[in-house]
Length: 470
Image (cartoon, rainbow, N blue to C red; front, side, top):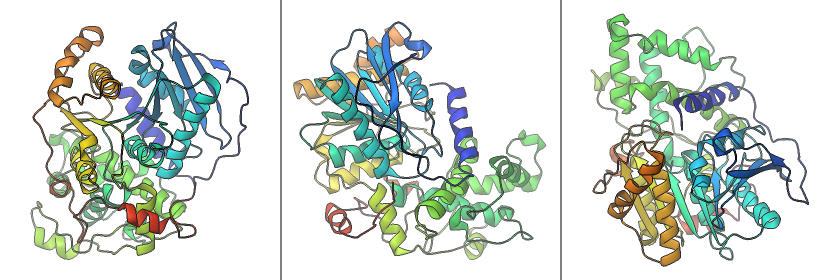
């Protein structure tokens, strides 16, 4: 999990979200064992790797270690990536090689297209599991793992497919975006409007105006570099503090204070608040608005009264909220052991997402299936390898023995894995995140969990065309 890899992922996200993200051309369905492919260098000589494309056009990569423990980890990648290609899943395998080192087979899907779509991604993740079983036989134990946006996907897999004939035995969610789509991006909605209040350059006064909930218009010519140039113009964020004007520094201080987004991750969040919102609104919801901020009071600036009087306000289209919620929100109807791992100072997916997930399972009466662990780290994609090894071992032992681990027992076990992988173990067994609404400003009425109840999901499922198309 290197910073270079994470930066490359962000660059791919920002660049490709500019284009309209359509469904991939149909691929082919293999009827024989997929062809072997070179494994990432970190697994050379340790595993045999396979790759291909499923019938929906999604690329996949499978790895089977030389000393296979008969367990399988089905991986749901983060993003949402705006584009995909045959290399994407192999890059994920290199990032998660520790799971193969620990003896697990590994399978991952690129998903059938780029852009937003949680149910689509969950279906493609399930498809690669079925493909593995068809070509290589049924494993003794199967776990679904999701990182970041993939945490949302994997949690959806657990709810949608976890009860089908014992397809999965457990769930591992790391740095997961677990509040769902209808609430999980509210801080970026706030960023979009607060940024424009102070900076007034996205759009500029002389440019065509558009509602900020679009992120950007569907036909916007702006590039990610253009957006970063405008952020620099307004805040001087790429400059040393001594190189910023007083106005730039005040703008930067106000934006970060009001949104609670750390300065170091502000560029990433602004890219999502423009290009990801553009994809959700223009490509997935037919131009309808799923976002709102009426009734939200912004605080923390040098002049809250002026900010609240001048910031842009809007209300969502109820059908757009319904479709985004149906696609991505979680009901908490989980019957499998679920283990989560999250850095307390995660700058990209705030740790309070874990509070939302616990409240979601508690609202469904399923929080007894959940164990959450937290670390003193301050990264999103770069947690200690030993912690990932300790997490999958704890989940596997829980499934095999029925003995539920504790944060303390997982932290204690990590020291043995660190003797192999090094890098340290940074668990805080006594930590518990504050409620979601203490970090992300709740919208009026959006204070109870789950965000989508099981009854709502059943009712909405009867509506023709509900959700987001695959």
